[in-house]
Length: 111
Length: 110
Image (cartoon, rainbow over all chains, first blue to last red; front, side, top):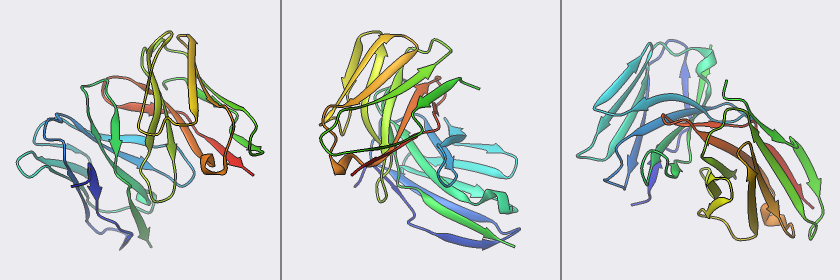
């Protein structure tokens, strides 16, 4: 299994839709996980951290299944401004260790 | 705002020339990183630093060197640029709950 794998995408959804992205990871020792958002030709920006079974922030919910080594990101009531690439990120080597990035899933929200 | 800046933002250089990219931070973070991002790949770690004069290699370090003589500056050098080093380069700092990235340097080697 590759270190971090994400849904290939792209996801094209209408405004108001609910969309979910999946991510699997291979390092069973990883304790924390991140979802980053990257707009076209911009730097990645932290969207959510996931340290336990899950985390919710407004329309965004991240869930973690350690047994299956699986992370998901759910976006409810999609907005046009949610259009971006979403990166699943898994640290290795402790909290100051290297980050392993998935290749990203592109989301396009249409009017 | 983490106060991390990269320079230059864009650069075009010729094969075989040396190139240095600069990353500057204003908040005294110990850990700094250089990544490259290419189509079809996730961000990949080139080198990182865990203190002044303390650096280590990442996944794709061949052809790159780094230096950190001051806490605030982390330099990435391509000793002899090749076309395969055409990429977008991101510097990052670690803030404990994730990394904060600079705006990136778009490097083209012709």
